[in-house]
Image 1 (cartoon, rainbow, N blue to C red):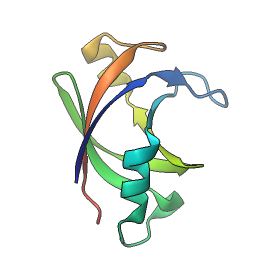
Image 2: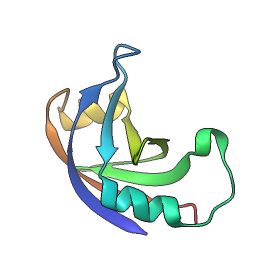
Image 3: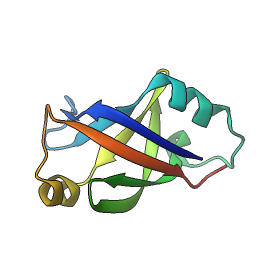
Length: 95
């Protein structure tokens, strides 16, 4: 499954310098509906691409969405940060 969406970067309020974007509700619901082997924290393994940067990570469920963590290396490579709207390509590996 492959998804493309635009989202705003935000800093996690519980921990400084941890940045995320939300996977929007519609693709999040589609991802959640797919059967898969259980993983820690009900995470889903993905490959994410922002600009020219691609990395393997996991998304984590929160309410009706998933959270995509943005590594510091991604923020630096793409010169992006809190409050920026970015386009994300997401390939789901689980399922």
